[in-house]
Length: 269
Image (cartoon, rainbow, N blue to C red; front, top):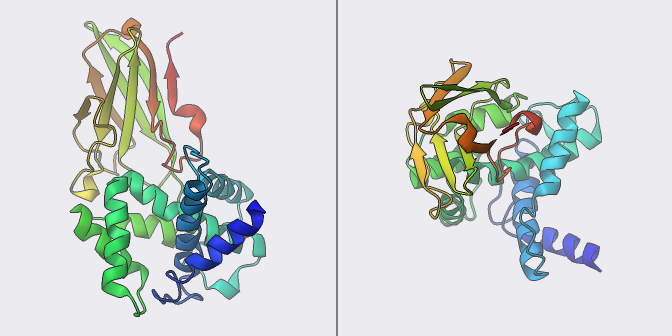
């Protein structure tokens, strides 16, 4: 029964994405299927009252699987020109869905929802393109997002950030991060201290020319200097000694599609 509901929700969602918002489903198939998958997964979680923390987890897992196959093609590939149907399906449904949920990580979930509503208002009964959508997101968020559209849809660049090193000097802790993947991202980093308190640090991406709102207003956030893509590493200091730090985590929300989460965490030994 749940499977039938899922299919029904998905097909109903196509009333908005592809019918009212008539994207070219051969050239931009990921907008058609991906946006539909995004809203139908959220709807299913709400209607069934499942209260799943990340109802889009399946889309992320499918994307990670596709990356590991080594057969991924850019989403600019024509729908009929994929060698493997499974790869087309994951690119369309799952990676297309992650495009939206991860954009929520980049600009804030509230801004993402505002973007979707404004996108509908401005392009209903028209034939919007990916550029049309990302321009709406830029207007809503006040940030530059051409890099996001380019890396995620026009390349197969992956995201992989790591906590490279944690050292202590003069009773302060220096954290060194490394960008291993080619796709850049702004970074949410959470630090849990041994006394049970939590603090967040936000590293804006320079090419965004802006920052997102604090996703956890109840947690103190420090906005650090931005990180330029051309630099492979980034350092910042915490005004506590290393022994006071229990753990450090990159993106605890896991809404950033980092392909290797094993290097996203530091735990005091």
